[in-house]
Image 1 (cartoon, rainbow, N blue to C red):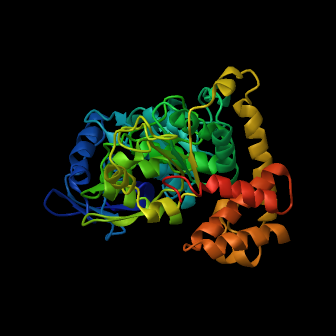
Image 2: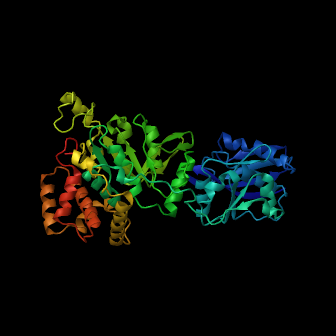
Image 3: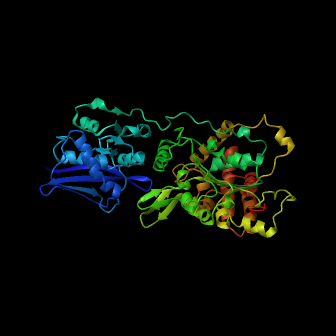
Length: 511
């Protein structure tokens, strides 16, 4: 009898956390104690591990068994510790002689017959193991597709506890398959919604291009059926593909939420579009005991969050967006867990001009009293709207615009310009902690990234008339994006003027 140490992984928020499973077997009355803040599912692991060990012909020690999960102050949850606990018992009882477990981590739930089952958040756990310097991770075969996206660590998959034991002892290395040539885009490519389908809306198309090139948030106001949703759904297709690490983060978050993308194309930025009846918890995230459920803002991480019928969302849900729009994180503080979840997304909202939706142009068809329109508009608070750079009003395209559809630019053509603009901004910001114009800090913007003389004069006149100093800063950031799209080294008068138009000064909701 002796002591064994095995590496396991649990979830903390939407990230994995390493756990050292220490199993001590000593003389005394037969008992099994689990210490280290385990929840019910972890405490029950001892029963599953015992039946699984008996089921593969090994012996459960008839001694006092103490299972310690460290760090002791971190609450452990989930059934993913079943496998490391079983391996620890086998190693401590001498049934895995001369096996080096120091550079291997284990994740998996055990059936009573020893079958291995997938657990929620396996990819997030594997990422944590890789960060900790672990060389190999053993997971159930059901997690093979998810793990095939993970480079930088050897992934061993198995169907049964007996296979894991055989691999560790070298008796049957062919009993498992090893993931090779990992890739984050192993699924079929997704067909992107095409901008060619958008009829008319020259300003809307320009706003979408500027938003994609500079990472700017976007609000669209217009009557029902005018094309707001059509435009918003095409924004992810204009954005650059995610790099390997960002794609892995997106895959891990969606795996934790139990919402893996059916097409497997994690390089395409995700699009989150919650219904307007979604609660604040559904939008921002929630905590149930020690389990964290990511909200729509986290599921849209590295992608786009689109709120259609934005004024219909609950006020606490909308106001809760103010923090992640500025910081890229959503902070949750509950009795069971306190921490922050990633929420760096591009925000797009769409709204009708009034409850009946017909207050467009002269508004002759609108039946809403002015007081009702004011209350409806007030559902989107000033501080929230102030964080949205691009704010445009959409109207029905004219008959001439609708008639000309053959020459509409497709997504790939616009996306190529967006790529070039992003490359220009990335070269300009080389060595700095931001890569897109929307992320330039206000202080740096005023000191370093100024327009030319004519542009500065126009911007100064806007600043003199503006009670809000944040507005001119956002106009200047957009002007840099417009200049990048045009291939200019510095924004001038025309770029400032375009940015002013995209800011929506003078429209009913954005002035």
